[in-house]
Amino acid sequence: MRVIGGEFRSRRLKTLPGLATRPTTDRLRETLFDVLAPRIEGVVFLDAYAGSGAVGIEALSRGAARAVFLEKNRAAVRMIAENLKSLGLRGRSDLVSAPSLSGLGKYPADIVFLDPPYDDADEY
Image 1: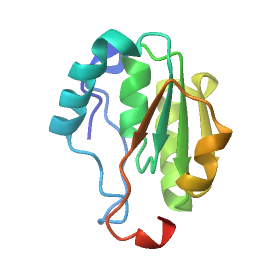
Image 2 (image 1 turned 180 degrees about the horizontal axis):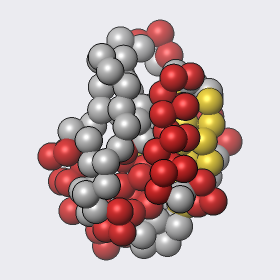
Image 3 (image 1 turned 90 degrees about the horizontal axis):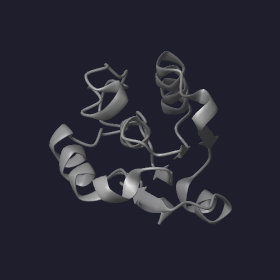
């Protein structure tokens, strides 16, 4: 998986094997950020159910001032931390290891993206 556009375009991101974190497809991320392009500069972007962190990292790459990543899977949290570190983004991000729904109200954001996994119906 890679960052599609912006400052970190074409940089590779680590992902977890298997379907536990089902990454948001490149095509969906590209379409999403085509729509958000006029609004992304300088915002706080919250990536709930962050998985690999690809969506929040894409937001940072395209000009978001800060990103908050909410993810309860500990292996995924470690992966996001590695991705943020490799891109030098730890200073522009908050990585929270918690269920996404319980963390939503605690982190104000201008744009909130939620893409819950199929197998986590207990959370909602």
